[in-house]
Length: 73
Image 1 (cartoon, helix red, strand yellow):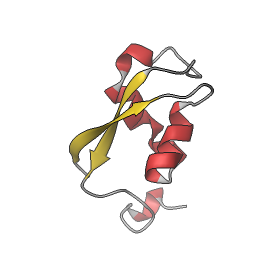
Image 2: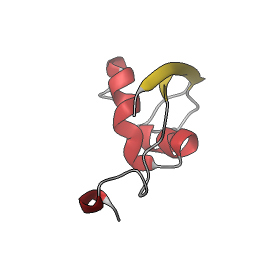
Image 3: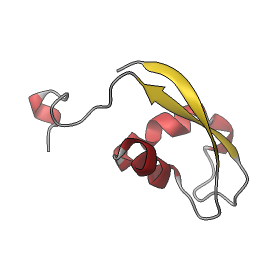
């Protein structure tokens, strides 16, 4: 799984990294990638609204079929 680019996202009031990960990747556990791309907001639990965020775009998205057996649900 490689990052191929970034999308720009303007946060809405009440959004969180895990909400955004679910919105963009259908997997809230991928929020760490959003946090890594936006280190200036790592101490923010819930966005106030208006924050400009970078959302990594991947060549593939990990799911149970792409995970090794010990990481599958």
